[in-house]
Amino acid sequence: MGIEHMKHLKVLVFLCVLTFAVSCGQQKKYVEYTVKKGETIRTIAKNLDIKTRDLLKLNPDVSRRPEANTVIKIPNKKFNTAVSEEKITEKKDSIIAAVKDPVSELDLLKKQYVVHKVKPKETIYGLKRFYNVTEEDLMNLNPFLFDGLKIGQIIKIKPINEGEEVENLIYKDSVQDNATLKLALLLPFRANEYDSISSKTLYKNNRLANIVSDFYLGAELAIDSLKQHGVLVYLNVFDTGKKNSKIKRILSENDLEENDAIIGPLYSDEAKVLANNISKTPVIFPVYSKSQSKFSSTDIIKTAPERKEYVSALVDYIKENYTEGTITVVGDNTEDSNYDLYKVKNSLTKHDSINVVYQISPKKGYIKKDRFLEVLKPSTNNWVVLATKDNVVASDAINSLISLPDSTSVKVFALDKATTFDKIDNRKLAKIGFTFVTDTYIDETSYATQRFNQMYFDKNKALPSYYATKGFDITYDILMRLASGNSLKSTFKKGASYRVESKFDYSKKTFSTSENKGLFIVQFNPDLSITRLK
Image (cartoon, rainbow, N blue to C red):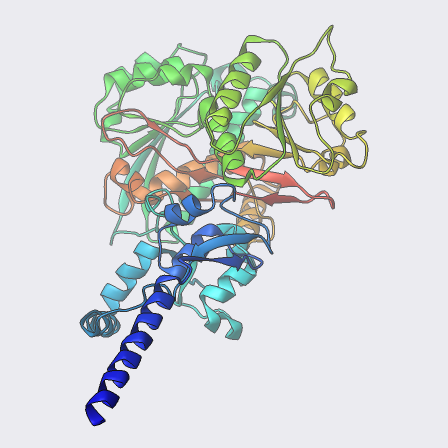
């Protein structure tokens, strides 16, 4: 009887084990998850300890920044949870080791997050504007911030995507002890021509004179600012005069290679002559020129992004944020417009989620509203890219788009704002969420901006112009990087820098002309303010 009872007991135990094994085998490998406000595919993947690209593969129809309450598929944590005690112990030991070694902990943190060391007078509002993140994101990553910022704190700004460590690096200013630099500034002051003209008449009638003088005043203020950081700068200023009239004489009469950097000339032909006659001294080309794409010298540093970078920046932004709806590109039939239209359309159609990109160009000089209604759809997203510099075509398109039926919403993008949209009422631009690429973005509320404006006003009794700010940003950035004691190109590999209104994100190739790719994506808001989206 006892043996028979044991047999029944063994069978019962076996069935229980079998049932448990079957139930485990039938557990769902994936479960549904509802996205919370502010979450992205990247942050969700990091919380799940999986790769971002794996989570995207599970949800091919979901964008990297899904809206709140979007339901996505995620791995079931309860599935296959058996973890050996050895692995658990190993993980605990590694965590303890990291805590014991603060240097290793910070290094590990930098691999996972963009980090920031809090400086005097910084605010949470300023940080969220600078890094383009929300206050909620900062608080979630750094709960101690509820007690306020403290000088010297290391805070996490945002997680770093896989493969994006270099792109997300922020250059950290550092100054070598007793840093001393020599700078040559080559600008077309044309002093000999204007010595008999009153300053009032000169600056009223001569745009170049305004540009050059403002750039110089900005550069001068940058040198003053660097002195406060312990950097001594010896400045040599050269008047290059009319185009191609004095550059060769300046080269023959002066040893420009004794300088740590040369800012200027303003003309591309002169920059090429200068770079071909010196070696190893960086030549900073401070303005945009269509001819700069032909630069070949490794010594030339292009501070203004190429046109192709504007196209790439906008296309990348659309790819990252597109979820559903229509995309239409508007051109004006000119050669430049056709090129931009083709590049945008061709790049977008290669994206997995974008099936078709519509194309519209003027007929007999204008675009009828009916042509937009043929491709735009109600109750969904309709994104329109204006690949034109024609004021009439741009104005015509926007007037048509703001008068669409209420059921058909639209968002308008442009490769840049320039003068194309200057005469269009900002209220119209705000109504369509006008979004564009730009090489300048200024936060008037930041301490750095307010300090710069005040210093400039105190010294020059006027507020800084666009070129004054450019002169400051370019000069300050180049000299601050050199003050680290490292070569200029080696600092480019250490990350992008943000100055008063410019971003400097140079190409990392050592044996080629260095190009700045620093651009912003900004949007008009209903209250006519402008927000940086990227």
